[in-house]
Length: 265
Image (cartoon, rainbow, N blue to C red; front, side, top):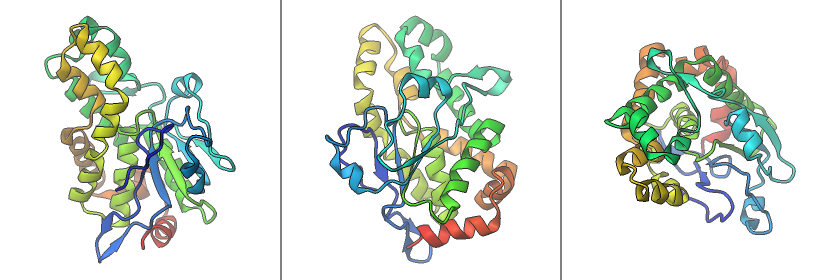
């Protein structure tokens, strides 16, 4: 789907127009995703104001919000929905920080903790935790509860880069509206160019200091294996998206029906 030409928000996208079953599509202008809003400047991005964003859901941790607070569009309400609560438990009980990119400041540390395929395994574990952890379920419950409200208006959800926590939120929303898994995978992977461009200076510094480009790519990109891990966990734990949203997130059927009625064209 179209990526907006916004100079002060990275990775701003409208899910509108994505194909759904039954010859339908997501209604444009209602479901938007992006990276963090700390640099949002209406004077430089007048098109953002034209979107009429009514609700912003911030999926970041307290540390991320404090370090780079959102500049919320005028007139919009802000909902804090911390998916990771400063770390989720991966396999073995280790706590995984929300900002894995911070490890890339030191190539030796990155190699120790993320080299030899450990980065992809670790991030796959994080994606599984998006489905199973209580902080993640509570956060995504806030997001979908807001989306079901009659006066929600256009809703923008975001994390830092708009790729992982945001990517899973977009996947769940699209599946719930009737997209197939091939379509959600295509949307998930489509953010790679914008994310890599946004983090290009960090990647360059890391590799110029001797860091392994594979580690940088694993941490700062999106890969099919990551989303597949979350989807497999959802099917294993709940059987499908409706049961996951209803049972794990606690969204009642009538709220799901309202979301579909509003967001399906």
